[in-house]
Image (cartoon, rainbow, N blue to C red; front, side, top):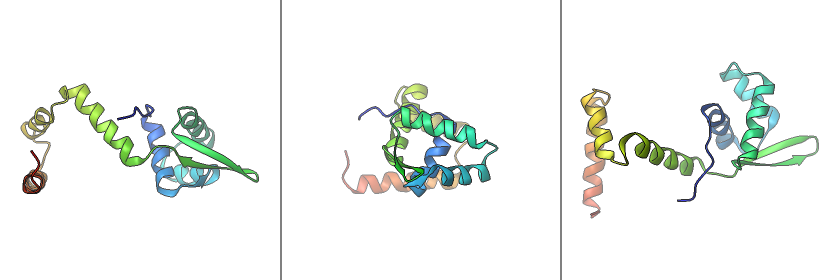
Length: 128
């Protein structure tokens, strides 16, 4: 798995907008984020610049606007984050993670039933 850039929580909020609406201009990103955050346009522009520097976004100038496109996929990024979380907190052991969630009552009966269903489905497809 190729290493993707580390993205802060704030940068991730910007990426979610870009993943959903790309290609998207600076003004459009700013308009969307000022409705859902308390960030100033200057803060949003700084976050966008950081994402470009980190290699998460590309841009092109179209007349007087900058239009952004993600260089990493949302699913790809989330897979990396999930792997990183598992490694950092549970030494890569998903069973330990699920046990901790179940023991701390962090999974509802519905979520546990969904996991059972997923595991049954996986077993039926012949996975070792």
